Image (cartoon, rainbow over all chains, first blue to last red; front, side, top):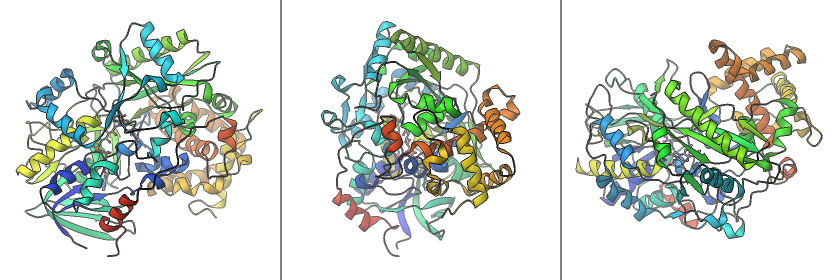
Length: 462
Length: 149
Ligand SMILES: Cc1cc2nc3c(=O)[nH]c(=O)nc-3n(C[C@H](O)[C@H](O)[C@H](O)COP(=O)(O)OP(=O)(O)OC[C@H]3O[C@@H](n4cnc5c(N)ncnc54)[C@H](O)[C@@H]3O)c2cc1C
């Protein structure tokens, strides 16, 4: 087994495969190290028991300090793109302005990002979800926004053809798309990268790095055997928590004061409406419409029209005993809307003496206010639609994990410089969601992909 | 044969399961669903430290009578009403125990286990999985995990 590479990339999630594909197309030898398993269309876990426990870190979720938020962090080749909703949105000027302000970097603007978004579109297929397959959950949501004179639009999703006319339900793809329609980076960029000769080591957990002229990457395979690799250039693409953990364990916190700081997650709170009529929220596209109105941008939250499989719904219901079972028996009569907050309180990721991560994340008064406003709006939408009962989910979830290794010019408040290299560490790059200097309030993954392309350019340039 | 818990701990999970999911007119109770032998499918992926804590906690609970357990889980389920220092551990306890019970109850376990989802009328459809021979070959050739080294 070859042990030395031009570039090693930690993480084969949304961003890692993009960087690998770009670098290998320039003739570099590249190795990706990924802790998760390599699943392909025919062997994704098909039952919720296996999907929840095997495709995520911590066996399903990692709680914040007071267990009020469950962080959902993918651990699988393809990362978030395997298990996420696949919704792809470009940043608006507001989001770019916030990024520019916080980082001090002028390339955060729509003009500079337009060719990067185009690059993504050259590699994956993005389609608008057609209204004609919208399910009843989506109709309730759309009508609710209409009644409030709030704008909405059809969602853009990375997918080729989900064959809804055959009755397919995209809720099934939350544990990986079995028909290769969802445009995961596994089936798109990584496929190309592997064809170009990129090597990958799956079920390999990176523990620490030793920076130098030649960098050492230390970790262990699934049998617990310790193996070291070396490289000229190292790229972090392990996500906010993954990257922070490795750098902490490498003893670099003192060297990087902002490591693990400025962590955001767009906290999401689901609300279920129970109706007399059948809703069958699992049918067809999981989501069809998004709230699309400047009102939401100014208020600092958005509404999302979602649903989840039975185990997840049972956990959201704030009930136990017979009451829980009675509610669960009405699952096909439930609709669901969630409020996703653009969080203003940065959280903090750290690692304790046992090497375990700690996530400190609160909602301040402003964030609480946003949550409440969103809840009230959902309440009204469900009431007007005739819901007989409205139930707020028991805990919040963090799906959009961002920051921790923020990009910026100030070394005391950021971790990564404008060339995507960690301050003071030569040829160690970061190319994923951990770069985000603040919360954009927009689905992050399209911009994560754009940043991965930009990071690859920086690696090649260096 | 369950690998990660002993008999005492398993019995406690079943007791707790029946408190979380005691059955109603249409659905059987947790113990009658009889899927406890699948618990390793969940526990296998839990961090070692958390698994140890869970085992220890179950061992402790195993000495308590059912009515005390029911008070504990009822209090834990009211975590949002508790004072901050108490709320966090109770919330965590609630999520973990309810999570285990609900996973073993509401997940389908294998092809022949459709009963609960059928009863819920939960019936999402999907075309059969595609065969991706190209990717299989790429993995065989390029994944160190699959290559003998
Ligand atoms: C349920 C869910 C739904 C979502 N829906 C959407 C959506 O519709 N639209 C959207 O834009 N975004 C969505 N997101 C968010 C989106 O998926 C993330 O923003 C995106 O995945 C971040 O990409 P990344 O490359 O930074 O990290 P990831 O995709 O998380 O990849 C990081 C990879 O690094 C690996 N790794 C970490 N640590 C180590 C280590 N020590 N050793 C080896 N490997 C390691 C991980 O296993 C993982 O595979 C969703 C997220 C979730 C969880």
